[in-house]
Length: 319
Image (cartoon, rainbow, N blue to C red; front, side, top):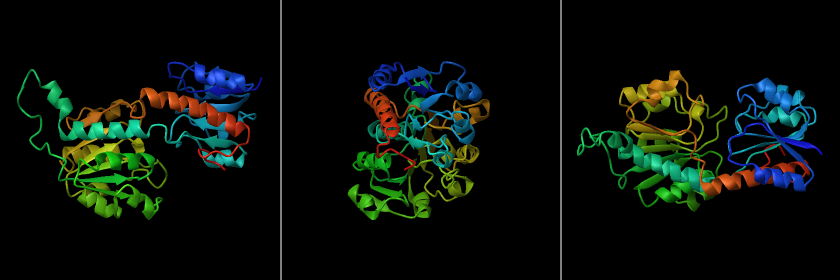
């Protein structure tokens, strides 16, 4: 039987994928070697017709060593580790899994907002040493504040709806969404300069592309007039972490809630940022809930089968 390979394991079970692929005449194999060994992964997938990945980099060199591959599916929404141009040039179809974690990521975003504005983590750490003292003197309320959203796609729109009753105003930037989308979620469309200048909380929900790489850089921090909270549940490299640390050290921003990082897992070089008292960090699990995890695996498997059958699907990135 033709082989489908999962190169990035880590989920509790792959029974869903195994059963579905077997039912349609495919054998599933799971890579269990060194997760950082790109050559071993490439060799393992050499005779696969389909490949499912999470973080593995898949590009022209990879495709050329796997001549039988017809389809690649990325577990999740972001696909910056999969080179679409190289895939298209070789007739390989690529898909992600869109919309499976709208509630999970937007819930996590709201949790990070509260954790930052209410000083929840430092407050918990000082409960035995300074019981009644607020951890920060500048903790603020949300009801009279402006929330700025960069990226008003599925997750950004969910955040807008959930925040609507908590803040005074929601503004957003997204050059790829029509005016109707802003109206639909009752969000004011503004220019990025205005969003940076007026927002008390800025939350990022854009894909990582050449256009958005280091979108939040030193120049952007200099335009933040309200000393905002910065939330990133999108992709780590949307933010220049060196400039973020400097902004925190200089007091240009209030705090930061981060679920994604330039290097994952973080390295020693990122320790100063992650240990900063004004940073709340979680380990890239904003996407996770019991429902979202099951949905992700089911739809990733279904997308793989659809690509191999040549079907048109909404999640396809190369058609």
